[in-house]
Length: 94
Image (cartoon, rainbow, N blue to C red):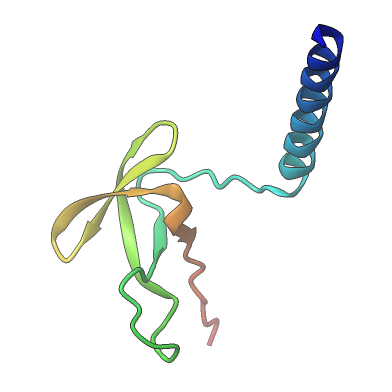
């Protein structure tokens, strides 16, 4: 009985490590700095026609490892990085 339990524990650890390595292959962590412009996920979306992302907002402070403070409507709001994406401004050369 004890051997079966140890073997099951070994298999669980191996499966956990394999799952983590597969997840880590596809994740692209974003590196945000003070002054960057970001879009914030619209958490108050009520219907499918509302935009998925709102902003742009400016990063005021970075709280390692996963939180940042942004300036939203002249207020400072702390947000998790999973709810942000970098804002790419389109520059017109004309």
